[in-house]
Length: 243
Image (tube, rainbow, N blue to C red; front, side, top):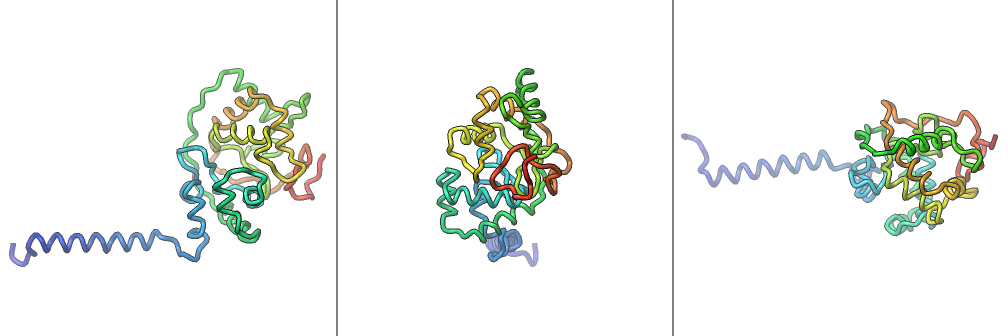
């Protein structure tokens, strides 16, 4: 064809064009290196893009979790109350103020959740799980999950996390860690007390029931507590007194 480049030069031109477009796209996709989005790349390597979590299921979603809750968890990992070597090493030299910035960044992200996975539960597990979540077990000193984590189970700002959208294995692991003392919080550690009152069947029923629940259209935590907590919990603002 008149005016056409010879094939070798056409291939060179095509490769150059593709490389230029790829570089331009990478420049668009790459966050400003001074932004918090760029500085938390080590976080999203495990917790998924923008903190959405991954299919792997071991690392929880952190996008949209209440800011004070996330800040406290970062402190717990850095200071040894929660034990996970990679997190502790990553955070060991970071200041309180910087951890607060990280927590605020992820708390501000309001992103869609993936579809809820199918969970197989027996009728007895379903009934027991819902009872513990909605009512608790007063005879054993176990308050309802909803009395602290919100009636919608999406958490309550600024310090109480949501329980929906978390994998069953992750929930099992965290309750187990509280039972054996490898996960701790500020004293009084109400979750450790509750977890130690649960037996294996209770934990399996609660985690399965929670992991099975569909996510509502709005997944934002409640803005504030409307009643006092049923027990004293460290890390919750002091104004929220026990009823």
